[in-house]
Image 1: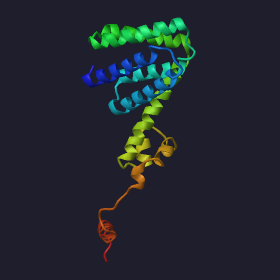
Image 2 (image 1 turned 30 degrees about the horizontal axis):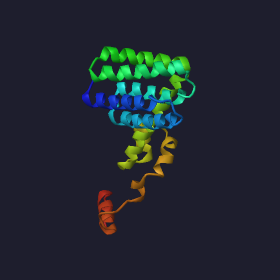
Image 3 (image 1 turned 90 degrees about the horizontal axis):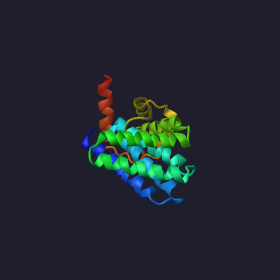
Image 4 (image 1 turned 180 degrees about the vertical axis):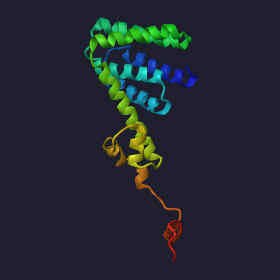
Length: 186
């Protein structure tokens, strides 16, 4: 596992443990924020380990209010075990803890596959939004990310790059270049 990915996963696991140490009503919104952060990591790094953790965090955000106190305790214990194993580079124990975490989630919610699709769609949209901010058209960004133009449309209107466009060449010079490009004589 790459060092950068390991740090991102450790951050996500540590934050999840901190959020869940005390069962509170604000846990749902904090887990939602954490899963949004993790989705951005997927868009940047495109790593399967990150996808696994992000789906887990998103699933936790969706089920945390429905989980029994006993399962909640087991969940917290396994999150801590996964974090500790990863801190010691013990990938075998880490993978076993992640597997047990998914089992806890599956027992509580049968929609884990839907959560995976939601996370992947959100990651594609975030990446598409980043491509829009770098100057690609909606069609280009959507095509690269496997989305429809309609998926990115709401984000295109919020992209400040599209509204803060300054021309560096005067209009006359741009017209001359265009005419020359198309072989039109003055």
